[in-house]
Image (cartoon, rainbow, N blue to C red; front, side):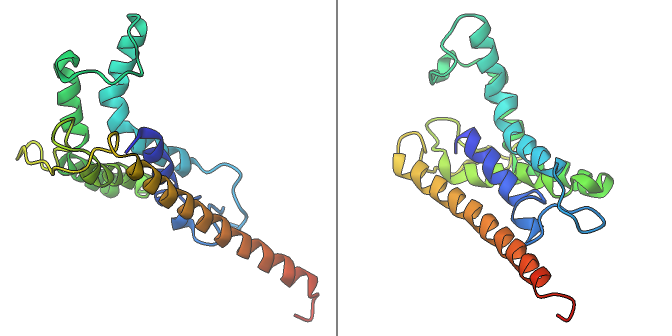
Length: 192
């Protein structure tokens, strides 16, 4: 999955502004909609983190040295720290351990941090063993699932973006029904 798709799906599925917010979305203690929902941005950050901590560093490095940052590098051109960072940030064991610690100690981050394991679960079938397979059980095992490379099959990219757009439409419909219902109730007057 591409990083932007991870960010958007993390925001939709792991923030109070997304589907977990239900019909109300992010609301304050009085039940009013919040204009700024920090969980939206935290979820986006957790969703992007696995790719940014591995390939983002390489992207910055290539940009600063005059290389082509957007071009897909060959495996032998990639520094070893990228592989190590990728293994650590794409391991369900490591993400699960960190998520459990956050769940225990940092209650406000409980929902947004779920975007990290979601990222990994989405990557498992979207990466083949040929190019950065997802090391699900690292460091205990080097097992990887031989999935379908999203870069080779454009139908996969279209499919997950359609799913993301449907999720976004679901949020819009849920919120519009809430807004329409409140407006209708106000127009009925005090005897309602």
